Structures are given as structure tokens and as C-alpha cells.
Image (cartoon, rainbow, N blue to C red):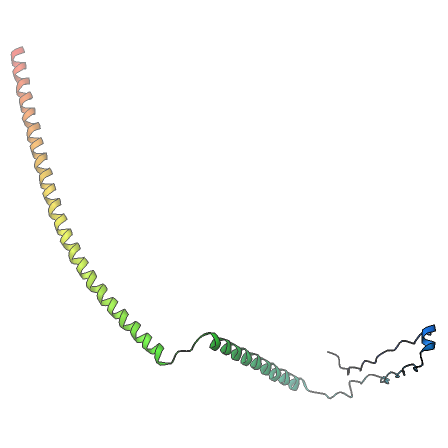
Length: 172
């Protein structure tokens, strides 16, 4: 930023050229205004008011705060205006009612879930008990089959052992 005052701009008028058509024109030429006087020397730093560093810092802080406040304030107002134009603001009772209704629904769903889980658990317990009884029966049946096979294998062993002893006696 310049410390000098801006100079007014003067219109520059170019000199008119004489032509044959201009000589027939009875109007006088337009007057040429002289340029405004220019200052002979720029203002010195002695003629400018002096401010201390603290005063300058304080002025900048105040000006920045004012600018930020105005920017925020106008942005907030514009946002509120646009929002109110497109979105209808409900009365204050409506959100309270919705929150209470949601809380009641959450409690009802939690209670229903607990009851459902209890029913499912009872059904699961019954199914588990039935499966355990069936598994015990299957295990008992498999054990009886194994015992029967072992008895059969032992009988075959004794039969062939007895035949082997008789064959050795005959051969001897």
C-alpha cells in the first residue's frame, strides 16, 4: 500500500490535426484544460502521523476481529435465511415428542428381544436335551454292536483254535 495520496487522472487531449474538412467547420476547437498541478515533493515521513508499535498492533487486532465478526455474522444470517426458505422449522414440542416416542419404542423392542431370546433359549435347551438323549441311544446301540462283534470274533477264535489243536493231535 502506498503512503502517497492518489493523484487525480487528467484527460489528455491530443492536438487536433488540421484537415480540409475542419476548415469548413464553423465551430471553434474545444478548449484544452491544463493538467492539475503536481506536488513538487512527496510527503515526507515526518509529516505522517506516528503510531507506536503497540497502537498499530491493537488497531490491526481490532480491525481483524471486526472483519471476522462481520464475515461470520453475515454468513450465519445468510445460512439461516436459506435454511428457513427450504426447510420448515418444527415447533419445539415436536422433537421432544419424537425423542420420547423413540425411547419408548427402544424399551419395547428391548423387552420383546429379551422375551424372544428366552423363548429361543428354552427351545434350544429342549432341542439340546433331545439331541443328547438321541446321542446316548446311538452310543448305546453302537456299544452293543461292538460287544456283539467282539463276542462273534471271540467265538470264531475259539472255534479255529480248537480246530487247530485237533489237527495237531491228529498229525502227531
